[in-house]
Image (tube, rainbow, N blue to C red; front, top):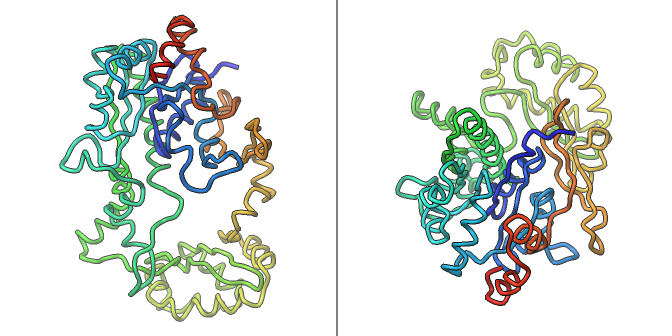
Length: 398
């Protein structure tokens, strides 16, 4: 089957989440993505909770479908020549270094252009390649804090609470893969390369701008109210006999259905509850009634009654339950791969977050070990001899 990006070669210098996930998406769509890491492997293999092979359990997801080579970019000038040969054979370079770090490794757009004038560079960082913060390191949590996102989470008189699934990393990765595809399309039409510049903070602020507008235009700071949706509702997490269910009633039509289901149809005519804002302002009148209704029922019963009324709802699943949910299983939302290592014969990995009817993304190969494809890439693609490769290894270059 023809893959959309099968004639595209990407050099992936990404670490941790945003950049590797971008490379993963490009690889799933057929691009030949070559992960380049320091000799012995990068630190993102061994941070956080480690699996049976003493490696991070997210690495198999983000590095699947990629080839793996090693290159010590700080070993100059020998490494610079190898880098140049790699870039000349590639269409796209992606990395998540600050401008200063990129300069030290020869990965600035200006330097890459000298090697290959039509190269596309996708650079992801916390703060972007411009501005006073451009050379500061940062992670998803920093972008959440500086975008106002943290100020939206938590409870009154308590410290802010961050989102726990690294939304800025993953959203930036999605934007990066989209922007890279657009840059490839532009190259197809004009023959021109370009630099694609993304930052976790820009992504985060693009999400919090509506709430920034509330502060700037209305002079109102959105309140910290836990799981409940501000100015909407009732939308919150409610406890049942054996677990929790999230109920989302936005708009009057859904509210009318919910009022009927919980046995309080009289609330529909209450003038205080005539719109979302009114129901938010008078939540102390509504929420106890919903809580009392769910508390008398099991999760299964609550879901059945709400789904019958077409009210958006869902169970609060534990991480040990998600992969076994029948809908998740039938639609293949969690994929499994054999890492060819003891204890990892059936490793759960994230599936591509979209499907396509004509050119579907696929997962074909496991994540590579450090330098696993050195001979294939350096020998087969670049034409270095076996003797040269042995010398590179002795010098600590690869």
